[in-house]
Length: 113
Image (cartoon, rainbow, N blue to C red; front, side, top):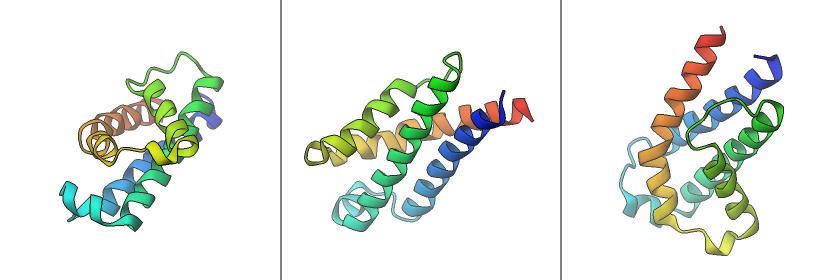
């Protein structure tokens, strides 16, 4: 794996870790939904993760990430259809899908070390 690919994987992992930090101690949807700053912070990190995933797949389309295309689509929705972002969908992704993506990313980074 190239250094550039490792950088994109690291950027995705950093975004996920940031989201985990943001929601630490606030793992209730109601808390998330009522805190605009928290929502915007999470959305921004998802944008970064989606953009890094897009670059990564352009660099190496053979890298297998379970939610790669969905993450890129989510990034596009947040940026281009900000008024159609559904807090419940974002929350579901953060709680149910990011932990698995994190494991995949860590596995790829550790495998290549």
